[in-house]
Length: 120
Image (cartoon, rainbow, N blue to C red):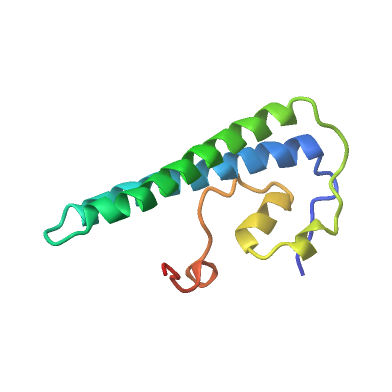
């Protein structure tokens, strides 16, 4: 069973969330480059797909902004974290942010968590 750190403060959790959001933004940035490389292949429908790439760019920028916002919010946030929160989360990598001595969730989780690719 998952154990939430009983001493986890809101400030520490929000700082962990900020770091995790930053990692997610970096992942989206890498995906942007991979997709862009595919669009340069012969026969690619670049004009139609540019809008999709722009959505990835927007997603990355939004994640970066949220990471910064969470970091700034953590500077003025106090109190303990509700121990019931992990039961409401899906991913183990998200739950790990609540564990005692948890790392900054610097990866996207296990292969099982990544699941099937649903691009369309």
